[in-house]
Image (cartoon, rainbow over all chains, first blue to last red; front, side, top):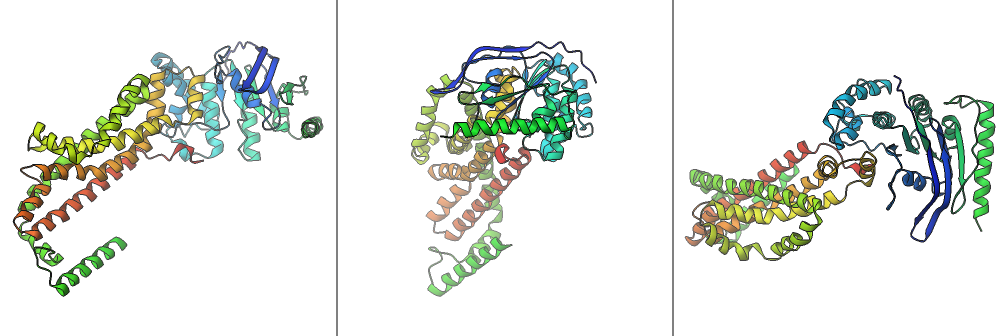
Length: 244
Length: 245
């Protein structure tokens, strides 16, 4: 399935993210290129999730810049709805009956595309963790937003399932402005047109790293593995710098 | 199986105690004597049991509806919560047995006062468990709904309320367990029918075995009500607690 998507870039200027006295980021300027996937890589606790929640308008006192779709690490499927109902959740919550009717065929097609075409009527509890995350991917896509934010979407899956879902996501999100937060350098290098490393407290964002080739990139590509080594070294350096 | 063996063992011990000590029947009748009365006065007992069961079931339904409605109103509106929540708490600070005579005075000796009494006992566990459940919605779901531009009422009805149903189910189970208290207190204070009424009448006339037979049926009624509620709750809320992972 293809969508004609005209995606805007997402830009951040002079942003300050703080929880009380704890400043996560200040005077932040960032540009996420339109129609591309940007991966934000950083160690746990550096503030990647805060940045993503800030972009999504989920932090207190924040407003998001434009409509977007958000995918968290947990699938967040509602256990009392079947899979189709979960994928259409946004339309149900906006109480837009007309949009719900037009979205339903799309939801079915998306579920078929993520390999759940025969599980539409199942409850989430009947599905494996990987399948539930596929359903969450379909729900995120069904929102049909040009900007998509994902917070470690495949972090708790086993390695093989994770690779499969990365391939699926890269294919399905083509043309959208996507921001993926991850602590896995390989995931960032496979999915991101751009990879940016977050380091320090308050964090600073490194210059864009742009590996060659289309996404999803082959995990066994020597260039990718070389870059992975560099990224890991960079992440470790910053850690040893921050420990007194 | 094990509860049955325990029950039979207790009954045998009670029987042995009654015979060994020679306690008069009007003080402590042996279970065999209660059993005989249960069979002999079966029609009378069933008539009263049906009456009491009706009071309990109607009280439970009324209490559940009232409790659920209040909990939803409290969750939806801070204004209502601030004004009415203290009243709800005060209503529970008054022992129900203290207002039982008033309810009988206002609503009469018939069924209405007992249903009101049962509903009064029941609605509080329902309000508190459901309201608690409505406040403890998984924040991940609420975040997701916010990014989807959800209408507040849709979030309440389609996320917070279903998410609180397991809490409501445990409230309903507590309610079913205490429903007999309300009904029977009402019958003791003033009634013209029911198992509680039969107990006070038979005790006053020295027919202690009949009072025990009524008590036995009351116990069965309470158990049946609890199990029916438990089964209904399981069917209504088949999913697991969401934060289980």
